[in-house]
Amino acid sequence: MAEQTRRRARHAYDHRLRRMRGQALKPENPGAAEAGQRDVAVDCGWGRLIFGTTFDEPGALVAALQEERPDRRDIAFYVRDPHVLLAAAPQELFLDPSHTYRLDLATYRAARSRRKGFTIRRVSSKGDAEAVNCLYTSRGMVPVPVEFFWTRLDPRTITVLVAEEEESGEIVGTAMGVDHQRCTGGADGGASLWCLAVSPQARFPGVGEALVRRLAELYKGRGRPHLDLSVMHDNAQAIALYEKLGFARVPFFTVKKKNTINEALYAGPPVEEALNPYAAIIVNEARRRGIQAQIIDADGGFFRLSYGGRSVKCRESLSEFTSGVAMSICDDKAVTRRVVERAGLSVPEQIAAGDEAALAAFLDRHGSVVVKPARGEQGRGIAVGLTGLEETLAAIEAARAFCNEVLVEQCVAGQDLRLVVIDYKVVAAAIRRPAQVIGDGRSSIRDLIAVQSRRRAAATGGESTIPLDAETERCVASAGFSLDDVPQAGTAICVRKTANLHTGGTIHDVTGETHGALIEAAVSAARAIEIPVTGIDLMVRSPREPGYWFIEANERPGLANHEPQPTAERFVDFLFPLSMPQPVRSAWRREAE
Image: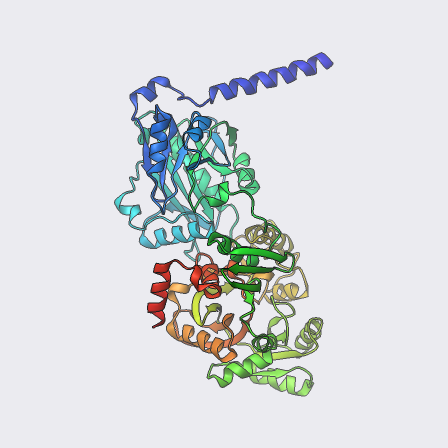
């Protein structure tokens, strides 16, 4: 038995050795490499994909990488001798800490059934291109000039796919494929996958898998032998997906140029790993500018930023420049409402909970109400759309667990619009949508919530989850279901009425389309409170229309929720104006004037 075990182990080792030799850093067909093009670099919009196997001399490959444009990210793939390349330019180049994975298309089998709720297709409009760039930016990737998709992209060589939700028409995923056979004239016969990005707001699972499968099927149909990709070594979620689809790791290496875009890949791990996303995004932006950051309390999100002779303490986006009086106004929702009402903003009617007769009359007058603690954040203790006296009283008791003083407010219909105001300028606007699940015909609502909650947590660093509490149960019941019901496939069920990120809500950027009257209202509210950094919540019929109701102001808005808008950059600009490059400061002054 022991001898048999040793033989099996030896056989497995020999198999791995043969496999590595077969996938070594040399052309699969040496004759093809000689017949194909030499020194190949393909423009992919975000940068050039440089085929290392088409370069005979390391010096020529180094020269190609040195030609990288300042705003692009070039990638030298299939580098034969990375140690030799790095020795030739150690101050300029680095070995990318990514693994290469390969899918053998000869043995690949397509999925038996297609995912429902979204469609995979090619980029076909300017709107598609802009949506792709939004996804790139939200994932820290380099955006592509929109005109590239029509003026410089060869569709026979590069394929850009998008995933479009069928109901909303939103672009929630993208992937790019490169046909090596056509790029290199046969020097490399395979294909590769790049820039896979899925929106954290995607309502349906399987978007990333569907994009990868579509590219695999495309290149299998063209007769390509394999599909390769490069993935960060610590991206466990992506690696799990690729291995599930049949990708296997292969010993190919990637070299990139040291630049500001790639800095995080070669500068070593940041010390602020324990910070939450709202503090980390600010600290990272400060360090990028050479501003010293001292972590005071990572768990609480406290840090100190120092630049020149100036030092500022912050807790996430709350800084020393927000006064205690402004904080007190924001902290008490009843006071906030009175202050902004005097400034001329439209506010819903509101009463303090306590008198049952007054509450009953308030319900009769408005039909539907919102119950919320006078003090609190992140949607805790808030119940929306209450129509009966008993359920309103129950919601008041639940809210008192967060604050003794509870407010009952007229429930106004519309969309929840968050506007981030920094230095009395709106820098981001986003529609916040309540958490919902989509039935699949097999799973209970309870299980659908658990799955969606895991997806939201993975997409937001654990910040967004859907609580399974009495309020969720009430919202599900108001839709005509119980948590253990199995809804039909495609049935959308709103499981929370509040749109807060921390209760599973999703955020959708509308900065470029927000009506001027809404922007003016947000700035007026910030000036009335005299708070330089705030998140103003309005209820609107549409972000493109002027009508609104003021809901509340947040003294510590989450800046990490509004990508691709540069919220962290504007916050650091506000704290340290001299850290801005001179051209930016000049433009900022002209705008202020």
